[in-house]
Image (cartoon, rainbow, N blue to C red; front, side):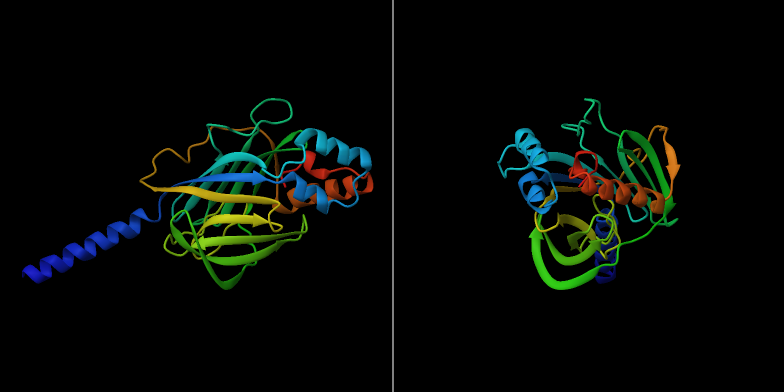
Length: 246
């Protein structure tokens, strides 16, 4: 009887640990390396290059932001960290909330884009990932490597995901791997989003967002706005990422 009781206790504890590991908060640091980005934008005018150097300098230390991801098996919310939330060019806090409901296979993103507020509301469209046989440690977890391509911005995306945290959530608009994404790399170091802390806890009101206004559009419409703006910026020898999130 003692062995049975002990076995039941172990199984209960294991089930509890599994439940805890599918719910919590991740803290990320998002770093944008403008020197890298500028080197890729070969179409920029001399005036535009001077503008970037004047704004960001020649340092490769990068521009850092704190981001957070609340996650469960069924949903996620990615947003700016409260301690140093990104400021828009107008000086006000920028609207940036990315929500996903995995159970309903639906996403609703609230994004300020090119001076307008949008509600990007659509079914989930997971990237096409290729999982590779490489591992590394991120925030104390062994992670596997996966890659995809953002065909709208022509960017290679590298993700590192933890199978020990069996949820498909991730930072930015990336998800759909068999484990929580703890690190993203955009275009070989142009932008990195790296988890600094994973806290497992029962979430209560983290997913309750106030009602926000904006023009409701689909994923396809959102991608077309971005693609058209990049095309026009290239034609005008301008940096499109003054107005877009890289």
